[in-house]
Image 1 (cartoon, one colour):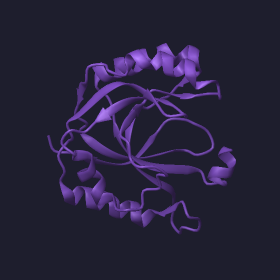
Image 2 (cartoon, helix red, strand yellow):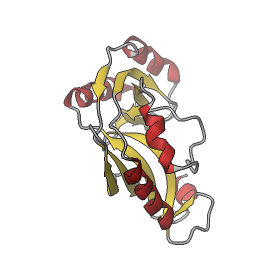
Image 3 (cartoon, helix red, strand yellow):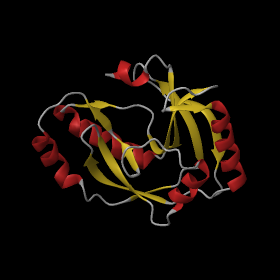
Length: 189
């Protein structure tokens, strides 16, 4: 399945907010431990995805390729925008079919302001939902037991999070692995 997606292209790029807050990371780790018996596999490099961009290349050929020049233009647009660090709230546990997440709320709408300079080429197939991935589901087990495990943890008290930079990262398209920073744009405090 991954081979059909990457079609031999080596790296995939996304814009993210890295998460390094100790309280948030502790919550994420405890949720991952709780869901391990339900098939959740660990997920490295904690981050909030902002914008899905595609496979970087000097000359795009496929519909999910992105020109290196466009990535450079996005970096320049973010620098020129001189944006403030968002005041986010990391809440309780929830899940998509593919992964458990911690919900992220953006009470000031700052994420929309950060996403705006990146343009309209987000390759997302559904509306943007900010979240912090806790793990990935490694199989196709029944969702009922997972939903039951998550239910009492959905209303955890919110933890404040204030990321200090936006990063353009890439990862190995053939196999899950660490995120590599291609560009980093600081956000004002």
